[in-house]
Image 1: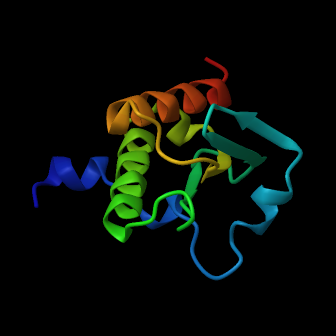
Image 2: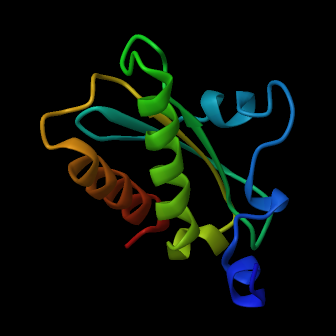
Length: 119
């Protein structure tokens, strides 16, 4: 792995670690709604936002699809300026994957991240 790739990676400080780590963010009153997505936003540690992704089996039946959606969401977060905003974010899938497929879903995730970061 090159040094540049490691620098752009999603380190441990940008992830929720441990059982129940999402709980505070899920109880937060600030929620940003998309068509099939819900972004829970809570204050976090200054300078390092954390991202959690919830993709229930009832909306994405196959594990391959759920894991792909999570990977796409993490990649969008990794490259987004909200990564340094100091927020705890939990992205929850609230409906089946729309007809637009992955690209439409990725655009929706980016739009929610823009709104969370105040852009």
